[in-house]
Length: 124
Length: 248
Ligand code: SF4
Ligand code: SF4
Ligand code: FES
Image (cartoon, rainbow over all chains, first blue to last red):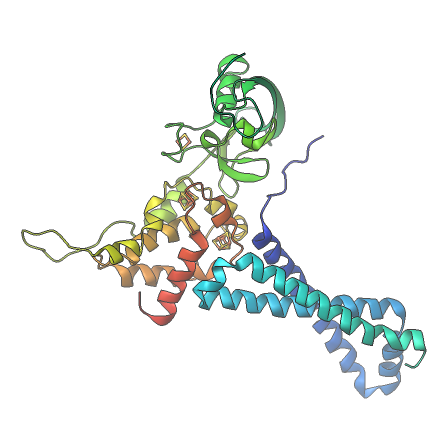
């Protein structure tokens, strides 16, 4: 049976906005997590065992995702600032979006090499 | 069939096609929630979506309810969600939108029946920006002159037909009906940047409030949806800058 409502077919602008919200939420959740793990600092034992966890492959992949979220959120934020302040940016809003998305992608790939390398070389 | 009628794309404009429509319906007297109904009608490729809706209403099911008046893209009464996008049913041809159609009422406004929504919140938001010329001084027995450049400042936003395609495509408006919405800002823009108008400050104050321009997150849905091709997001950005720099 048909869904009760269909998805609104927005163009790049809508998806830029949705992705901005999602990545913003992820970054926020990470900061909470980060506050919790840093707060264990006065019991070094717990702190160290938590940080050992970060060495495993799943959390490393998670960090790669987090890096992308951070980069995208920052770069798309710049795009919105450009749209707000420079009338020229609004005419090329789609181009700027694709540029920022690719830039975030490329920078994530570079970062991924550094994040994942220690796992494969075993030098944590 | 010999015909000299221009073809739209590669389809023969006069050929009869079977058009399949899935329409979201709601009758407040019997339904507790909306449901989908399917219809099949024969239309020419050059017919509009509105033609197909009329065909259903006049030959298949007279209870199907929708608004329309001019049928030529002028009055702005027949905005609806057609295949996931806000459009006027009267200016979209079957040859452009295809023969498989999913049609829903526009979002963010309460549904009254079938494709008819209550436009009052939308018009209240329109009225809230004082959408008329305020010029209290007496020009005497002369016209209020305006240069061509000054007239060009707001030319784009004079084209609005208040169809609500923009406002009801806005993700921010769906989530928060308090937001005045792009259509109200477009109509404020039309007077804010009119050199003869003296109500700029009042309008900028209104749009500087919590429900004003700062709700806009530049998702461009409104610009994509406007059947008049108004650069809606750009107009909103111009108003934001007018507030920020305190100059128009
Ligand atoms: S650009 Fe602003 S007003 Fe237009 S749809 Fe997006 S958020 Fe809404
Ligand atoms: S700005 Fe465009 S989409 Fe919005 S109400 Fe006016 S004509 Fe309709
Ligand atoms: S019926 Fe008037 S705009 Fe479509």
